[in-house]
Length: 421
Ligand code: AMP
Ligand code: GLY
Image 1 (tube, rainbow, N blue to C red):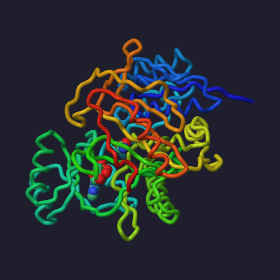
Image 2 (image 1 turned 60 degrees about the horizontal axis):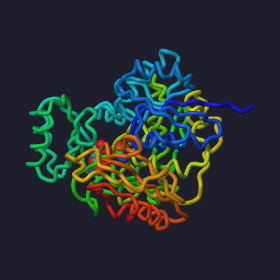
Image 3 (image 1 turned 30 degrees about the horizontal axis):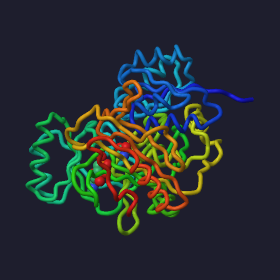
Image 4 (image 1 turned 45 degrees about the vertical axis):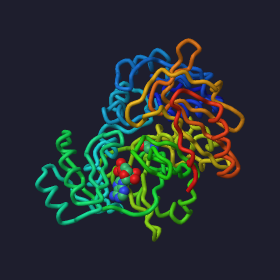
């Protein structure tokens, strides 16, 4: 018996375009509605945009009823932290994404650190402070380098790595003066970072292929932090032995601890890990959603239909789900950004060279784009991502860059070193 699904994807980034595209690869998905979506999801065959913002829960609920949506996938952290899952679930709607309490694993660094400590999950030693004097006394005791993290969603701007005691003091003052109520101060860890995303139904979990993203704006990992300027998958740093370690010492205990607290976590647990030179994985942070741009390299390699995985999580049947299947090969995503990003930039510049999302072995996932008539215009800092797919990393990278060369808009900027590691 064939089943058909209509899915609502909430969000407007490259991640949501990749989710919509991946869902529509499945024979069972008849329609995707994206709210609010972007230029890419507007023209994706089988997908429709609705101009509803991600925190307008009432209108989102209406769309679910009107369109007879079978389940909803929440892309970004903001609506999760605001409790969208709780609200939709109360209306009997199936949602892939954690509840508000569970989303604190991303939205509150202090909550997350407390959870790691009580479950003995390897992480940087830390203390949480709600007043400046205590924080400064701790800094004096610990010296530098040291890491100061704001408690609360901060769009990647709430983490300061202080290389000197003066910088550390300043960071504490700045973050408290910006209105954050709590700060986490933690040990500086050396090593290599890797993103490991797991899907979970609250009982079991399955790892997606590991990916590495490039957060800094400049080549050679220099300059300001961004939402992510590119990514590649799979990341060879996650050897099979490390994968086992991450499962046993980080993911399984996290899910056990959540359950102990009465939390059935349904969604993505995205572990941002630091791998020490000795090969020990520690958790830097959890995100409660798919990563962007990681999703743009992970999903093109996924062979198992995404809707089946999501439904297994929603129905709490992941334990009996067959092993996830993957295409052989590698994916590299390069983000093209508006000049000036991550600071100020112009919108409304004409984009040329983008016809469809699929160009031979490259996929174009839009983020900050919009259509005005038939003109595709820039509409954000990260404008689009090009994912090249190949039998090896070099081929994948060459395909991404070759496709990018045919795309242009005023001020286009992208890093030329994505996937070099
Ligand atoms: P987070 O939001 O906690 O992942 O932090 C953002 C980025 O800051 C991470 O991706 C790391 O590059 C860096 N970072 C966070 N915590 C630490 C730490 N304890 N030691 C070194 N770098 C860190
Ligand atoms: N690529 C980083 C993130 O999604 O948070």
